[in-house]
Structures are given as C-alpha cells and as structure tokens.
Image (tube, rainbow, N blue to C red; front, side, top):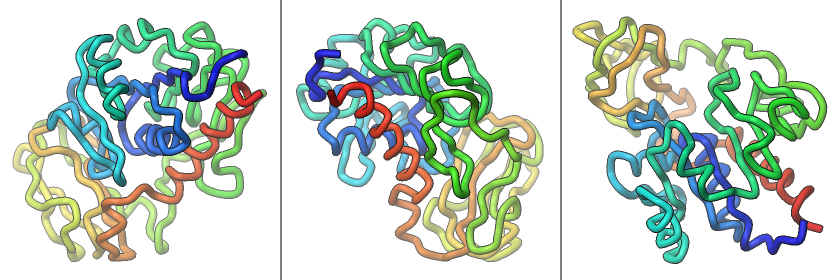
Length: 269
C-alpha cells in the first residue's frame, strides 16, 4: 500500500492483557505509532502486564516497554516522539478514529462485536468469537487454546466461546476468582501473593472471595472497582511461579505474533 512500516499507525481497542501483548510485540518489531483506547474503569485482571494501568497511574511498563496516558492528538504524537505507547480513555474510539490508523485491532475480547467495522481502517483485525472475517473485519485471530490458537482466519469466524477457562496445570474454572455478587470489590491480597485453597483474597460488599486452588495470585482486579455478579476478579496460577505474574503469557504471545504476521501480510510488500 506504499507505506513504510515505521510510519504505520495502529489503533488498538482495549489495553488489557491480550491488547497489551499485541502492543508490546508491535513495538518491539519497530511499529511504534500505537494508540490504545480504553474505558474509564478498566476491568483487566492481569494488571502487571496490562497498559490499561496507565489510566490510573499515568504510566505503565510491561517487560521494558512503557505506555503513558494521553488526552488528545497532540499528546499522542508527543508520546510517540518520546518512544512511548499512547493509552487514552476513549470508550467511543473517537480519538482513535481521528488518528486515521492504518490498522485497527479489536482486542476487547468481549466475545461479541461492540461496533467494529471494516470501514475503520485499511486493515481491521479482531480477536476471538463475535466477528466474521470479510464482514466485520478483514481477519480474525483465533484465541481459543489448542491446536488453532493464533490461526489467522480470512474467511469465517473463530471458534465459539466455550465458557471454560484454559487449562493450567490441570485446573480450569477452579483457578478463576469470580464476583459472588454485584458491588464494589475490595482486595485483601495483592498480585504475586502465594495463597492456599480457601484463603480470602477479597470481598464484594461483604461477600468473601476465596481461592479454590493453591498457587500464586497471578491477576487481581483493581481495588475499589465496581463489579457485576460472576465477573472475573482474578486468577490463581497453580504452577506457583511468581515471575509469571509480571511477564506476558504463552497465549498472549501467540496471539500477538499472529497480529504482527497479519500486518506484515498486508503492509510488508
């Protein structure tokens, strides 16, 4: 399409775990004009590897790459000049669209399309179920663990949402912490803490949230977040390796690599 790869502007919807892995990989591939659009109260669980933490802290570093909170087009471009990923509170994607990105990646992982269209950029990519390649976006990236993880789909859809978290060391749903009721979440533990089965790691309006397996608290939603019943609040990694809390996961790296490949298919000509 006649663009230098270093000039490509990439807009990423979301700044949680998967979106952040994508931004991190693109940045390290020298595609560095990246704008991530988030909601005012992000619900990321794996906050130590999510650029959305910049919404609260102003800046967040993931494996040596930093993202900063921006407000407008000028601050986006200033962030890029300083070698930083731009993170904006932009729930309606207005700022993202105003930057006229060459690539838009829907990495919200909502399991449904919240409004992404083919018209948003010359290349529109979407993660997981809820999108049809050629209708909602140009390509879909498979997010379901297994043989097809990371597959680039150019015709059709990703596998349906199973509703079952991925298997880690023989544990699936029991490693996930969920809100027992709607209300405000209060943390009683921190990411990186070692927990035993039955330990209280938080509460929602007086209802305790307890670990169902022993391991390391790999992710936990931000203290003070308003949540709905059943929402994922955190996860316990039964492998017990604390360093995993602060590094990008195998699944996220696979998906991020596929997004990079998809961009190369179109722009590396």
